[in-house]
Image (cartoon, one colour):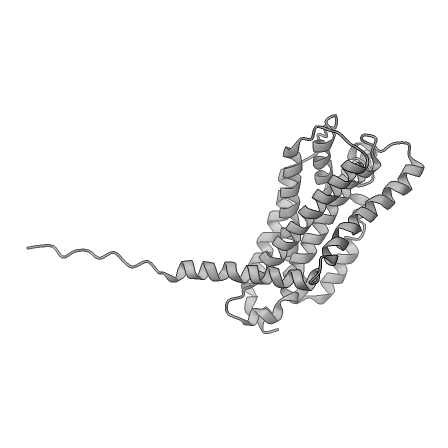
Length: 271
């Protein structure tokens, strides 16, 4: 007797189509976000660059009058830029991801748009915008002050990767909390207002007294401002930095944020 041929199960053809639809939805959301957040003219992006430049210039003007030189190097502009741009990237990306649900709630009624698409779209656009801003600001600082240093790009890239993870994780958790509990957004804004003072922008960790170091070590942004400065200042070698600690600050909120959004996605849709 001849054995009947065994037919292999057909692979579902819808899976690649679903992935393509998801990618197309994300691109459409990014384009929508670009037009609403930065306008249909380049003026919105110009302002995104001018804001940090103006802030760094004001800090330089204020502290150069009081201090002879910054804690590292001789350029106030470069010293404050390395700290401020890290904080700004964290704030801008976390705010963008945190407001994704509320900003795109009406679009979630469409089957092809999911809460994941909204988080990814706003996060990607915010990251790309801040990377562009950082590149322009650093290029401007190097040109204005004719700074010539041999940079170590490894810690710089590590810093940007860690700050994106941190901001995305915190933003994902905030996306659920701020939408489900409107008061949370106000509380979070008040709680994070002192970050400018406690994130190592105006100083380095080693300048602080021991009791202040023991407290500020728990701020993950202090680790990141110290790490990025090792890429610009070859003589700076801090021993307090823990990338594992920073990554945990990003991974844990992201885990619980995704868990909560997945669990209560239907409640968010019909709220």
